[in-house]
Image 1 (spheres, rainbow, N blue to C red):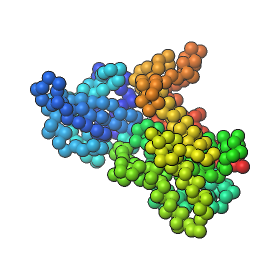
Image 2 (image 1 turned 180 degrees about the vertical axis):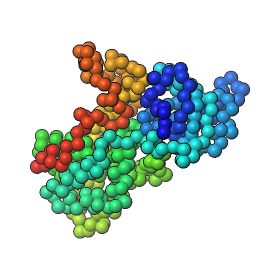
Image 3 (image 1 turned 30 degrees about the vertical axis):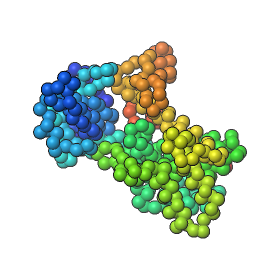
Image 4 (image 1 turned 180 degrees about the horizontal axis):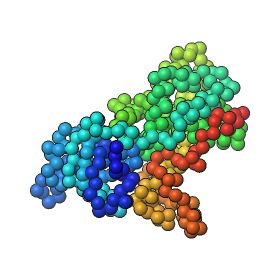
Length: 358
């Protein structure tokens, strides 16, 4: 069992620690003034990632290692450019028998069975029988269902934890159903179908064992094109299937990133595609915001400080509610800003009857 996690770094500033990690990445570089090489690495556990550097005597130690393997590392924790890093003194390959895999991959805070049941409940209430049988053809597929329930939604940006894809999709479905009544141009069944299937390709784009990363198929094709292929395969199995519905669902998959420069082959052109893109982007950004707040807290930043620069959002962020509560003398406890999925207050699991489907 690990006795040091990366989220604990602020409590171990200037201390020497020894622990096990996933070696997410490493690179051997040349020293600027000559005189040899040095090692840079990224160490990861379920609470986050930390850069590490080793200046001497690393070649033999690192030789058996590959990206994604487990290592035992000893080094001093310190701040560099306002972030914690580890100056490595020793590092070695670690066998799987030495570690508990649960320490290394973050996991959703929510009950996967409950989320899965709620998602299926929404589909069971579809009034469109063709959309219902299409979505259930995915959810009832044992191979797809197993992967869908455990896959992360991303390698590192938002919902990057076991069960993250299901958590992201379920939240998005709730948000879609809450917003659809305001827009009579939108078909709720079609919108929810797009929400459930838009990221289905990530179950083949990503891998998740000791760390999160991209499969070869994911690197060469990407989840949008993978999802398009999966849709067409299911439609063939369901024939006869309405061509108009197939086209509309396929369009939502192809356009859900919203812009060509974001990887969408098409721009959203239908009411359902436009709303899906907008709400999907919002849901992902809000989770990125929560992650940034949690990371700032783990670095020892106070409620009155902005986060580090968030590259995906091109800005630093500020936790307004924590700041107001601190001013009122009731700052939220650290447990509400955990790295990973949102707190229960942010994302209640309320059951299939929580949002009426019209």
